[in-house]
Image (cartoon, rainbow, N blue to C red; front, side, top):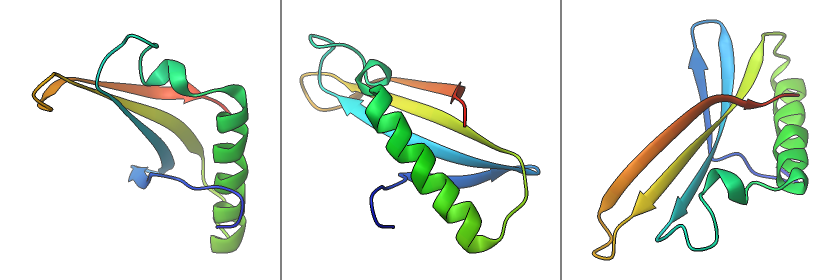
Length: 88
C-alpha cells in the first residue's frame, strides 16, 4: 500500500487485527513497543484504513504490537504481545 505497511493482518474471531512487529537486540534505546512513535502509529492506522476500504470490510479492528528482544547470540530472549496497543 502506498504510504504505509502493516507487518501482520490477522483475524481474532470477528475482529481484524493489524499487528506491528518490533525486534530489538537490546533495550539500551528502549523496548520495541516504545519505538512506535505517534507518526508510526498514524502511518499504520492510515494503511489499515486503506486496507479496510479496499476490501470493503465493515468489521471491528484493533492494533496489536509484538515486541521481540534478542540476546547477544541472536536468540529470542523475550516476546511481548500487547493487544489493543493503540486505537483508530
